[in-house]
Length: 542
Image 1: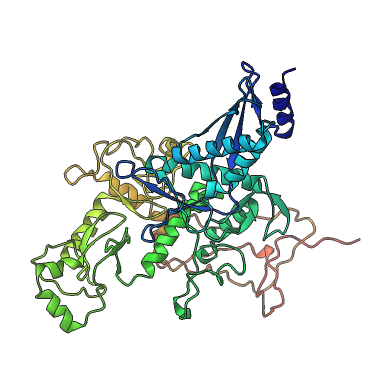
Image 2 (image 1 turned 30 degrees about the horizontal axis):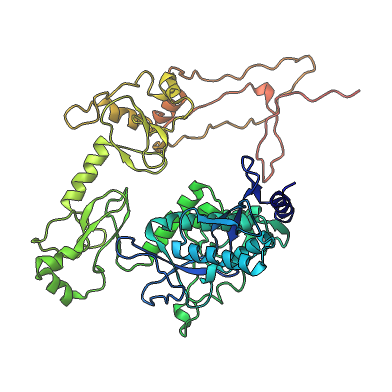
C-alpha cells in the first residue's frame, strides 16, 4: 500500500471529522472550527471605500463601536498529497472560508507556514503537524484574539456572520446543563432560557408560569430577571441617587423568545403603554365618554396659572397649536384646554368647567341616543349602516341585537329573531338600509321601551285588608258532619291578567267574607298568632 494512503488513514483515526475524497484517495478535507476562548472585536467596512487590512496590528478606531463575536465560520482545509511526497514535494494545502471573512493575505501567510513546517521536517510525514498548527491558529482567530486588535470584514458579510454567531451560540447553549434558579433542578439548555441582558439562566416552564401570572394580575414590575442580585448589580441602577434607580422590565421580543403566547405579550404591551401614559403629566384623555382614550399634548393643561393661561390665549398660533391633541384610540382631534373638537389656531378658548356640556356635546349625545345602540358589554355606541340587526362590536367582539341591545349567542345568533317571546320576532332585516335621520321608523323606540318594562317600577297601590268578623260563640259540630261546607265568597272579576288587576285595583275596596257559623270555634288569644280558624274537625279517640 502507498505510504501516502497509509498516512491519510492514520490521520482519519486521529481526526474522525476528516473526509477522504472517494475519487482521489490522496486528497482529504477537514473543517476546523473557529471558536476563541473569548469574543473578538469585528468591524464591518464598506468595500467601495477601502480594502482588506494586510497587517495584523490594526488598531481599532475608538469612535466606532465594533461587534463582539464568539463564533466564526470554519476554516476549510483541503490537503492533496502529490507523487513524490514527502521526500521531494510538499503537500498541496488549500485554505478557504465560506463566506470569505478572512483576507487573502492571511490565508497566504497560513500556507507559507505549512511550507516552513515541511522544510523543517526533513522529508518526513508532516500532515498531523500541519493540521495541529492550523487548529491552534483557528483557536487564536489567526492573531485577532489578542488585545487591541480588530478583525476587519466587508460590510456585505455582516448579516451572515451575525446570524452564524447566534446559531452557534444557541447550539452550544442547548448542549449544556444548567441549574434553574427558580425550581433549583438541573435542566438541559434546550429547556432553558438565557436572559439577553444579564445572561442568567432559568428553565422555560418556571419563567412561563411566573410571567403569565404577573401579567394577568397587572404586576408589571415583576416581569424582569428573577435573579435576586440582578437588579442590584445592574450598571443602570448603580447610581448615587437612589431615586433614579428603576427596575428594568423585559422587552416584548424577549417574552416571545421564552416563549409566551402572543395574546399574553400583547396584553403586556398594552399595560406598559397604559402605565407610561398614566405616569406622564402631559397625558390628557379623550372627551368622548364612550372612548376615553389617551392623548398627549406638548404642554400640560393644568400646569399654567390664570396669568399664563391668558398669555397663551393671546399668544401666537404656534403656541396655541401645542394644545392640539389627537386620541390614540378613536383619532378624535380636540383642544387640550377646553376639551372641545379642535377649533383651529386662531380661535381663543377658556379652560373647561368640570361637568359643563357644550351645545355641540348635547347635540352629539342626542344624536347618539336616537340613532345608535350601545354594546351591552362595553357600552360603546354603534350605528348601523346597512344589513341585518345581528351586530358584532368592533371593540370587544360581543354579538348583540341592534333593536333591543340583547346579548346573542355566537354559536346561534339568529335564534333571537326566531323566538316569539323576545320582541324581535321576524325583525332580523328591519332597518336594512341603516339607522339614519330621515328614515328612522318609530317601532325601534317602541321595541327598546318594551324591553325596559321590567325595569320600570309600578305605582304603589293600597290594598285594604280583608275583614273577617269574629264569631261570638262556637258552633256545635256533630259527629255526623263529615263534609265541610264551602265558605260563601263574593264574586271576583277575572277578565284581565294579574298585573293589570293590581294596577287598576280601586283605591277603596272592602271585601266581606261570611263563614258558616258551624265551622268557627274561638281559640285562646296569643301575642304572636292572633285568632286561628280550625278547618278540620278533631280526631275522635277511642
